[in-house]
Amino acid sequence: MTTAATTVAPFVTLHALQAFPPSLLNRDDSNTAKQIVIGDTLRVRVSAQSAKRAIRQSMRAHRLAGHEYGLRTSRFPALTAAVLVEEFGRPADVAAAKTAAVFRKLNLKATNKGDTAVLVFGREALPSTLAAVIDKAWEQIGDEVPADTLTAARTALDPGRALDVALFGRMLAEIPGGRIDGAVGVSHSFSVDAAAIEPDWWTAVDDAAVAGEPVSANLGESMVSAPILYRTASLDRRLLRTNLQAAGGADTDELAIAAERSFIEWFIRAVPSAKQRSSVAATLPSVVIAVAGPQPLSAANAFATPVAQPDVMATATTRLVATLDRAKAVIGDGHDVYLSADPAVDAVLEGKAPTTSIAAFLDAIAAR
Image 1 (cartoon, rainbow, N blue to C red):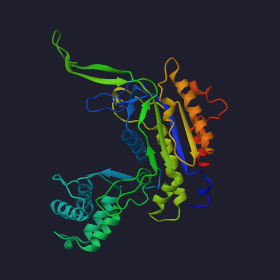
Image 2: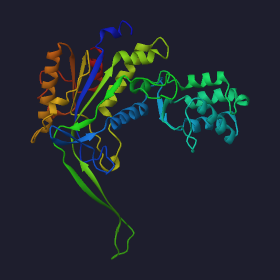
Image 3: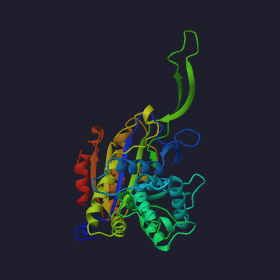
Image 4: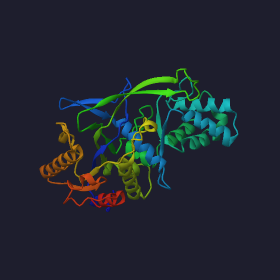
């Protein structure tokens, strides 16, 4: 870590309260909202996996120019073979066979569809890079693969300086050094108030039905809720720099700052994509609090007792602020930065100097 980076706190923990309209952000195998019992009260839950995917996908969709990103897929063999065909003019069947041979020797065994048996989180450029490696050794690759080709293939599998891989990490036990501990932790979100999950009976109507005929072509049911969620995530600034530094280069601190800002912005803005066409559950958090300090700390205990009506958001914000203030007093360290996106919480945050701009929020966190 450079001298500039040593002046900031090692961890940033984000806390958000976010209200959603009737929606189904994350469902279980029975097509209802995921749930959890907290404080002897049923709550709505959104899984950490769902939240992380929304953030990661949003970061890639709104990528920072000039930076690398990752791609998590089981289709790298097919993507690599396609590059061999399209860019190197190799026959499709032979390209697929030679690519499969390389992946087998990398211990990434293919399924009967030709995909890898596990999802691989690698660089977006992996298919092009690996295709060039295979093309160079085209005549030598058969049942066996030359040692230098395998070495080059393993290098291609390295995530390099992909910002999202450095942030979220990857589990790839099949190859040496394949595991990367992510610098980011994202919790399961849960509703601060008691769950209210309602059935939504729906029907698709046949617009061309003749008078007197049944017009309902499809019938169905889904379960929706309108929760106010407590969301939290943590960022280990030191580990982020370690992950980026491992790929080499002299601008690690600049990369880390860019990755941190992008992650925090999309923690605020990203929403799981499930059922969005029928719910438009595209809200912003009413309040986000970033705590820069010596360790990550959740404030979930603020909501062990569910918040009751009538003013759930203001009460939840009061509890969240009080819990974080007490934690800071107990530890004796930490700096809070506040973002208010809802006039309803401004009174609660009076005296906390909240910002109403994501850009200003990010600037304030960077200085902590």
